[in-house]
Image 1 (cartoon, rainbow, N blue to C red):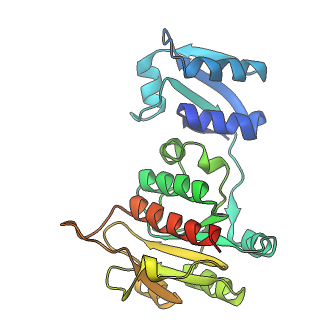
Image 2: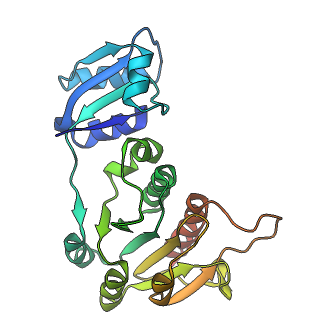
Length: 245
């Protein structure tokens, strides 16, 4: 069993973290890229020989996505389950979690993972249904973050949120109609931030299990932000608060 990854950052991140997972690597024939050559050298130093392939073949393997001239076939990584969550929480002094309720676009999932990694999030929680898969596109957009931040899929999101509350984790959801804005919130303790689906927001049951609701203040003509952009805004405000505590 294997999976495909592509893109310079995604391949580099896996090489740094777990080079034993590589099975085959293919690079674009005739491409002389200053960013690609150091990666090829690093792969060869681990005994992984990059094979040459034409653009049409690489495009097909990447299903038309931007592969930056490198595609790899690798062994699947660890799949986190909801049963892993209690031990993860117990190992942390001040958990910082991100919950994505119904984010179905792999580009948005990858961008959220990238922001989560940059902001120091310990894990991202998603429902098994109505959620984007962590495929090659998501990993490419995540720019290596998918190899560092655990993505935990849960069967029942409401039940998982109750588990978090029993562990004294404060759950803050984002909603356009919330009374308090992001900058009036307090996000310095054990925290799970909930972001809703593209266009639809959080589901009713998810909203009901939040301890507080906040909104991002908007002063321009647009009424909402892309979910990955909104996630970055909220995570880095939480990080600012936690660093200034």
